[in-house]
Image (cartoon, rainbow, N blue to C red; front, side, top):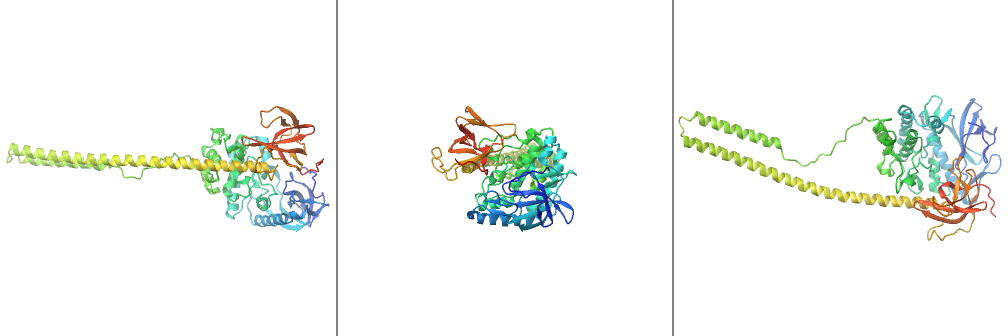
Length: 506
């Protein structure tokens, strides 16, 4: 990748033991910076990730990392420990689909993780060239990653940040998973100053709250399912918070109908279920569904013993045979038996036959009535269970939606709890524009809501937008009151991220 200059980055030519910094790889995040460096001993390129959480640390000179304030000391040290623990775990993996950690060490007041440098392009760039992938191309990328995830999950480790930018396609077309997010997740649980790892479209609901601990293989499965969705539709699925009330997602089975195997499409939709309980619980379970042949759905069988028609038929045949034998005997002895006696015998046999038939019919009628009553009772129980399940699902979704709204609002008003419409914040706060395409603008509205009149526009790269301390809920969205230059109005909170620039605080 081309060399870029970034604030807080080590200068080109700086040496970390035998490693000489050449350039910055990709775009630095809020948790660290990754460099391209040369191993001067072995004469080979490596990638070095530096622990530098910009929320509470900064590089004061050319190389030393210092904590912004003493109140951040505990959080910084906790994050440093998690960073090293993650490196120690990753160093144990030796799988072609997982980035290989060669070494880690402490220096300059922080820590570094040395990894193999992978030549190629990210899946993001790969998809820009092709837009969508064929089934063969998709499986050639996904299946090796699944094998890597199986090994990682077996060791009790999660990636937590799977997305196209973190999947690299080598020059030989094999994939590798980069930039694990587990250390950052652990720091987020310890300190609310560190933003959760949430990439809209690829993060499941449970990652929108640092306090939720029920993350597992199903969390990585959702993210990889979202990557597959993007590969067949050219767009990621809607953010999980948008899907809570009225889900706008178009099912993969509809997008790829006739182009991909039905089980492959169904496995993508399965992975993207909002509730973690409804998703595959292991990679093995998901992989088996993805590659299994299509089989008809078998209906559930009633375990109750039904009347046996075959037994009834055997009784009929036996009685008929008995009648035939008796008739033959009577015919054989007709010389010795009077006509009246023979007639009496025949009537007796017929009477016994009719009694047997009536008895079997009555037994069959009683059994059918009992079966009908049991079915009615079962339908009533199933109906009650269905109502309870729907009520529980609604309650869970209401909770998650409210939690997501509170998390979004707390980016602007950390202490706002009661009477949100009248609450105001005395300290001036500033935000940068995010998630706006370079050829687009962010509209300033006269009132909260997408249908309100546009009173101004903000360029996609603008920083230091002043927050005026007012916000409003519009359905499941948060709108905030801001000032840009001479214009005051309302913008959607999704497109603002807290500014770390040196804004003018007038």
